[in-house]
Image 1 (cartoon, each protein chain N blue to C red):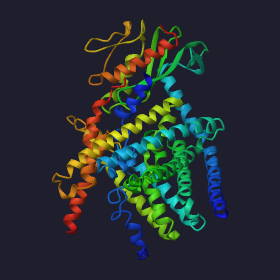
Image 2: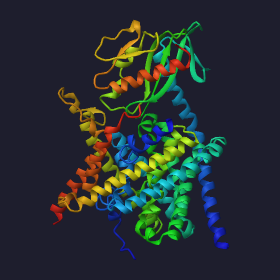
Image 3: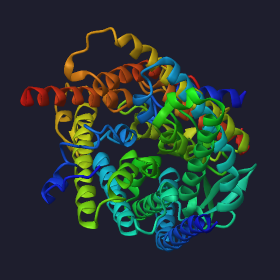
Image 4: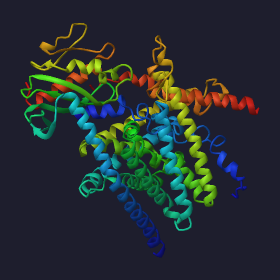
Length: 182
Length: 191
Length: 205
């Protein structure tokens, strides 16, 4: 019995010391980690909805979005985070829309696991730029081997990365549908 | 339907061994014979599902509500270590020959990155309880799949003339690489 | 089995080459293959792992007389998991970009067989000085392999090394994307192992 007591004691003591040490490190690290997250969020919002001065999170149809206001305090649109399955893993992105949700103002890819050099191109300006000033009628349409048309919401896919491009468009459309855009 | 996709995703499309590199040590160590590989696979599926069933409540009912996320790794690994200990005792009682066949690899399941990886991935992706269980089943099946295929190939390799320098881990890794290439073909199925 | 006391320099060097954790002991494969898609990632991972290895070995050797035999594995795991948590938190706080790149593989250092292996085989039996040398040697060996593997994969997969453009400055270079993915990792390590074994045989025989 004495041995069992000793075993339990050693394990408990070790766990307690470890827990205490970890709590300490956590208190120091957590605020910094939070700051990094907020900085990344801010960067993404400012990128997809240029002209944003302040933003506040709000919930629309069960989805968290960021209501953005310009320098004069007037609502200039919403920054909507969304994610879904890509070709190789989860794609998470942020896109901006005008207050009437009729137009996408920009898109920024926050994280992905797509093929480097191919699907990974969705994070490049050459692709994200297609979403700036894009009219949305019944959702964005991805076209292949056909000219894109910002007025009618057509975006052309990246050569050699159709699936990744399609995934990005699908994710945005799904988010738009959820917040009641169409 | 979503659960079926989750299962197939974990088992085949994003196979834990060939896509995420989890569970390599046993993959290289136990894949020499088909029947040992199958037994190991079964043990892993069992431990994985149980781990999922226990770590989820610990995470969502204790760690998160009490604001103790920094204890996650310690808690998870203790759960896994205890589970493996229990499984070991169970197998020893039920089937001596199986116990001997698995040998040192049984306690090594504790350090099988696939098990901890499973618990962490499920937590990272915020799966609900049932999703976590299905994910675990899929991951374990995928691991077994990779292990069994590898064992089948290695049994054949015994009869081939492998250059001296490549024998052992060298050729095994290259075969694994070709297997990984083959599994890349499944990419994009889930989306 | 009594161990002949190795000269101190040998205690350190053996982990670097002769008993290199990856090449010879074939341990710690998971992170080796997963995060070596670029030189800097491989290096960061190896440094994080070495941090955990050295600290946990240190604590195990200092506390070895206090830890009862039956619960040694559990105690080692708690110590290792604690240091991994520290490494993970510090990385996320100070180097967010690298933390994101290494992702879930940092917590997986907990089950890196090298660390538990050294704790059980060495730190639990040897005095502090030797344990430290052993841990640092193994850490260095791990660092060398991970960084070189990362460099090779980055070179063929992106055309750069440590982010410095090399091959990718050559216009007709099409990166071997497969090198960046899992298949490339397996193939590179397998061929590398083969090459080293071949050279070792030639040199030794």
